[in-house]
Image 1 (cartoon, rainbow, N blue to C red):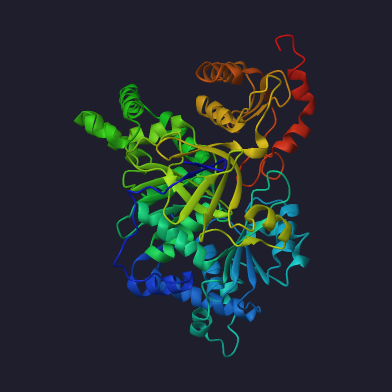
Image 2 (image 1 turned 180 degrees about the vertical axis):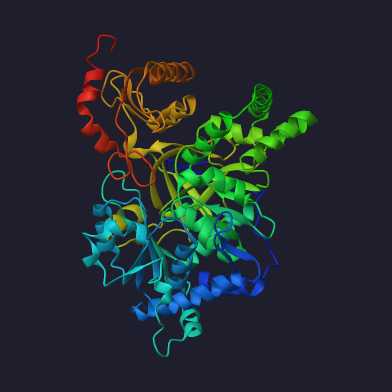
Length: 573
């Protein structure tokens, strides 16, 4: 319906809240303690192979020891504790311990440059910073910003500090309230300094209850922690959610270890960015025999025909066997739920996983609000981010901006009342900055960031992100692509190759040109890329990319202004 220039949509009527269940815990520490009592002997934290292996009982004991150690550093309810580490069990223990004291966690990306670390520490003002020893060198210039800097690992690790006399662990965690701060999560900072988003225990607990309502999973979730711990998706769907379900979490420290870690963990749940799913797709395709490729192509054709997972019923037993073998080859043979978010996921990637028989889905969320829409397995939701989840209201403003209202939104930005008033508003609607549209079935489609829309000389508004995603999907050699053309006669693109492609040789140039040609043919004629340049540079987080690998467009446009101008001066342009 249309109301005063605003499009609204109801929630999906087929999704209803569960009834008759025991009241959920009001804090994550209460959830942790309840899970500890329920499944004490289940493995909670592990690393691949014969590495770390802690049961929930051992996890709980480590949390209690570390909470006492943090208390000896002066950490009390209302404080913040920051972390600089790659994904590892000790990191989960330390943040969980901080939460038991009523302190909020502030996680830094392991690859953060000193200027970013200094900004986050200065903004969040943590009482203590816990750092992995291998990353301590990044702190040489900023140690003064925190009262206490202690090691995460090694003989002098924080958990080995003595608790203060009289420390009462039970009283500390039982005093934590639903409105206490759970975490400060920093935005990607695509257009400037990142902002710290403040989240309470209650808001995220309500969000996860709704998240799980749509697709309940069997008890005994096994997941793989490989997305950066500082990313909201990893913390929410993995770390915090495990406290509710008693999950078994396997930790993967670096992206290079992901393929082996998947085969070791055999997860039942997996969250990853579209880029990570694209990488797994490319890795599998590189191993396919002709018969396997033909089978996968047949399955993909059926997915495109029925747009969902129902294609499996129409496959031959032989094809089903082949697809099962392929799932096992990459460690996804036991998967119940595979999800992505945070950036546009190319249709080709989604089709690939549906064709494999992986229950693949996408949800829409931001650092400022939890998952408010989600696609459903086996339904024709490809190309959208699904329907509205109960407990959320989503509407489009007159200019198409997506607005979200719920009690599962953040409470505002740390130290930024001006930005809080602008984004969160007195009316309770959070402004996403994204432009979207609803189809006739109430499914939301995200067009692009509002500030990133291009308006070439012909006047047609163009969203660059979907084109960039299709380019990367069309050619596995393309690591990054940025489409330009605002107030220009046509579109052009800067291309950066994957690190494995060390040089811009003739073969790579031909593959990129072919990919651009195919994307042009399939797309709107007004959105054709008429010129492109392959850069020999490597784009890195902190410069051209954010820590979540999003494009820092303003920085790129400034840095490569000469190359962009040159594309419009060529005779073919």
